[in-house]
Length: 621
Image 1 (cartoon, rainbow, N blue to C red):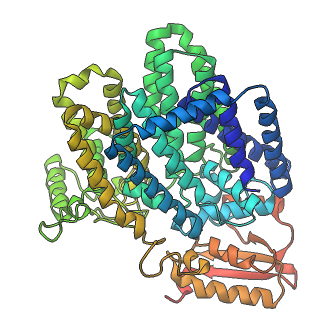
Image 2 (cartoon, rainbow, N blue to C red; image 1 turned 90 degrees about the vertical axis):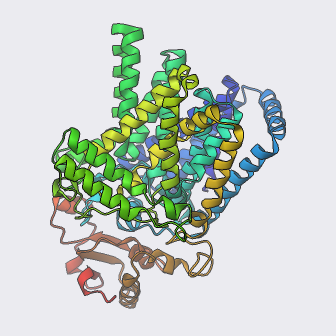
Image 3 (tube, rainbow, N blue to C red; image 1 turned 45 degrees about the horizontal axis):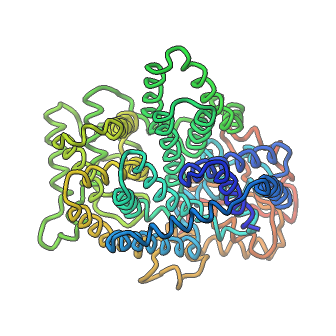
């Protein structure tokens, strides 16, 4: 039944294509509409406690029937002929461009194999991304519930909405990794379309896709269940409709899809507030210049659409936390602000991608640059009169600043070569006056830089921030491709493309928690073992507890946590042999008021119920 939502996208795309012979525009509109439909289905079914297998199938069948009916009014023959013409145009590409396209396809394919075969095992996913899905399915609603880990509740949920549909329809978590993978694949396609909007030719489009598909952090995340690639794709959609509006002016369609795409980005991850803000200001200034007071109406409509998309999540958060955003993460925002703080934040965030020597695999002949970078930052901070380890500017997760080395783990992998290319393209732009005529490209580069400055100025530093940089790296792909292509002979761009492709093998094949080859690769390790790749000391304890639960024939399980939130593998193991009702008990935080609303039984009073106490400090390494 997992084919139903996929078929819905295909039908929506086909129906839009009958109205406008523009593949790129139809693609963006179709996927955004699909995302909105998925959100509506989720929220409506949850409202009535019907978010379960039968009703999810019924909802997608209804959508499919509607679009099949709409398609009967149109002929697709013309568009099939256009597809054939498009296919022939690809065959007319130069051998080098065909080679680059083949490499892109191979990378996407290999990551897709990883996404399907590997068990989800990212640390955040084990703690809240996937546990919240489990409880939504169990409770037949996305309503908040009592939990020790409040991340289950207030974190932006769209990526998990999508994963929940796939998990409900497949009755397993086999395809949950595919949400990130699809987002990566669509982002690679999306940046090529943005490149065309920015004035790039077919070569520039392919080069932009090469840049995007080889970003180490993107490669590692694309086979997992995080949400940075998902928010990246929705931001790409928002940028596309921003460009469309700047080019064609305000229309009902542009207003709707600006609101839809921005709303979906925000519903997916909080970083969308930061990265989308400069684009919103750009649109606002354009509107004031071109529409004067008439700009107020479309602005209000877009804001109302964004609010409507996020309303369910906002209301649930406000009811429990008195804030639509939920709880503010302690120590994740800077306690001080100013020019010097921004400079410090910019330098420290850039240092996350400083290990260029190891990225280029030159460590045998050149000393790695991490130590030198650390020393340079110490000197600069000394000159500025700042403390490099100022606790007001460092996340509690880090405590002390350091320059991390190259990593094949999806939480800490930097993108040194790609950062070097971005900085290089910005430098080249200042020297090549021929590109200055492309005002849209220059403004785009400025907006992306402003987004990074905002990020570095607002948030404390931690080694895990590089994960949150991913949207910017991918959005920079068109900019880098066009600048290098317009400034140097094509052989230079081809050399750089081949270089990033060749160096990407490490992240494609040797993902630290989902390796395709080598020791403990995904083909040799059992699915259960893979769940515990980031926290192996939980494995035996959880297996023993499941044996105890089932030997007592327990059906209602209460969980308590102390110094721990690593939960999802236990939920999977508990339901392998027969279904069980699970909930957190003895909760002592904001969600404790939800106990009466969500409890189906009093765990302490039933003889056949089991309680599992998870205390990290008592686990054996």
